Length: 117
Image (cartoon, rainbow, N blue to C red; front, side, top):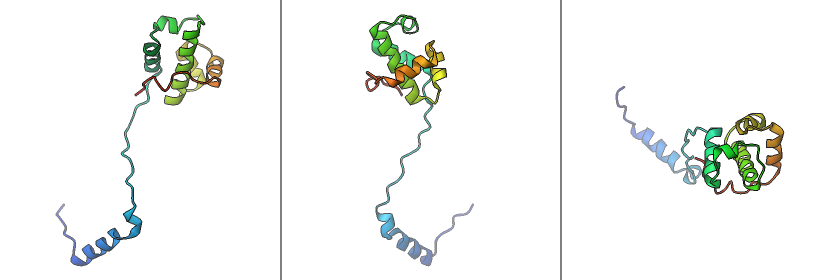
């Protein structure tokens, strides 16, 4: 393609358009970043690291307080950062979807402190 130069008349028209008050307060759109959502395994690892628990304990059937709080945060983070259904989140947790629904009814404990990219 060859470089086409603007005529004086076209430059004048472009200047008038640029001086229009509509364009004075124009705010540019933020740049779109193509982010891949984290996987359920990544979320589980982050939650286990935050609570300093072993993954085997996290996926076990034990119901002590720290494990249930960690699982609750896992469910909230998985629902927030992925498009997975409660059924798939439950499969990732090794639990039933009704367990995930129960966790989602309760308020999260520390999801604002767990860093998910």
